[in-house]
Length: 161
Image 1 (cartoon, helix red, strand yellow):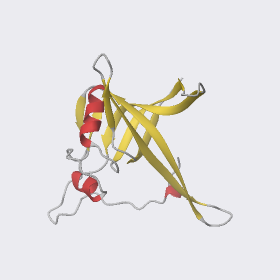
Image 2 (cartoon, one colour):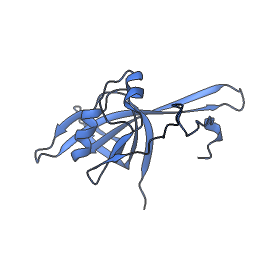
Image 3 (cartoon, rainbow, N blue to C red):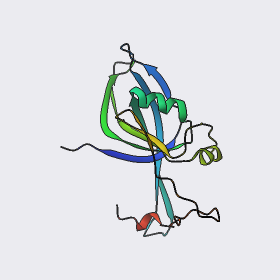
Image 4 (cartoon, helix red, strand yellow):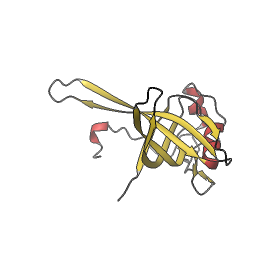
C-alpha cells in the first residue's frame, strides 16, 4: 500500500500552534490549491479550488508557526489521514487531512511580502522530517542581474498529470 500526497498551495489562514501534554508541538493550517481548465464544449475557462487542512508536528510545526503566514505559498508532502470525532450533537463526523512530513517554502522573502504576507524566513527554504533545515537551489544571477534560468510559460492543460 502507498499513501503519499504532494500539494502546492497558499495558506488560507495563519498557522495555529499548540502543544500535546507530552510537549510535542502541533501546528494546524489550511492551504488552497486550484486548477484551471477549458471546457471543451463551451470553450469557457473553469477553475476548481480545494481547501485542505494540514497538520505538522515537532520542530516542523514550530518552524511553520514562526515563518509562515496567511497567503504564503508552500509545498506540503505527507500522507492522507482520516480524522474522526463526535460533534456536540452526538453525530459521528470525519474529514480527510494531510499529516505533513515536509513543508517547504515556495517564495523568497520579497515574493512573500508582495503577496500580502510578512514573514522573515530565509528565502527558498523548507524543513524536512529529519529536523534539518533545507536550502533549496537558488537561481544564479548573471552579471546583468537577470536570472540565468529562463522562465517557462506552460499552460496547465499541457502538463500530463
